Length: 281
Image (cartoon, rainbow, N blue to C red; front, side, top):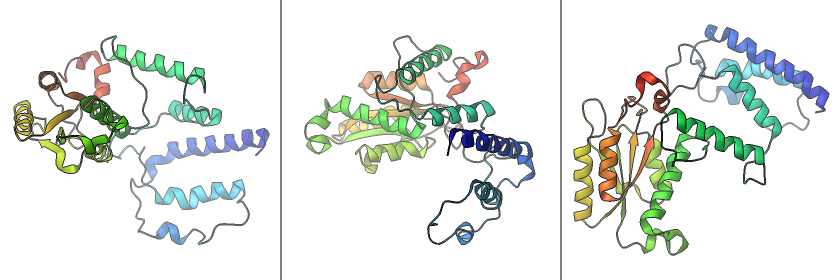
């Protein structure tokens, strides 16, 4: 595709997306599609020649739109908020068009430094200490995995560079609640903790983790010969938007020397609003 063709077709795609957003509410939120329906209208074998762009646009209208769940629909209340602003869509277009990778500062200085500044802006907006710094992960699930990997290495004195968890004398345990996102358990599995070493702490009537139950679970594990490693608290449990008592949990984590990760993907952005400042502590 030449730059001029890209320009022309790009305008077509933007117009197509703008039309879709304008008429989105006319679609059913979820299609009546049955398993296998989409496969049945697609070629069974890969095409020998590339399809023309006009045909691709036609496929969007005939194959894709009738068979997708419309996440941006005003009546979509499934899963989690995912509303896409036009500005964000254009930002994705620019990012994809530049096609750079932020592997290191040398790989793209602007990407690295813009990320650092943006994260620090966010830190200031939510009122975190200037000692905090971080990076942008691709998903909240990845963030939880990275946190548990860091917790594992901190607790074991960097066992990864030696014999790994297999050489640890005491099994490491993770603490979260039934209101936490399923990615917490998945991250624990990927990090090598094992499902049996993930403790689901009791919750109260508002679906928040009970600090007393958390400390009881930690003490029971210590007495049984386990080594408590990390706590994952939620600021916005995915199913109930529950808010764990972070200050009390942090005190427990500090008392026992545990890593504390807060999954705030669901409701943490409420901290940006002055009316909700400190509501989660």
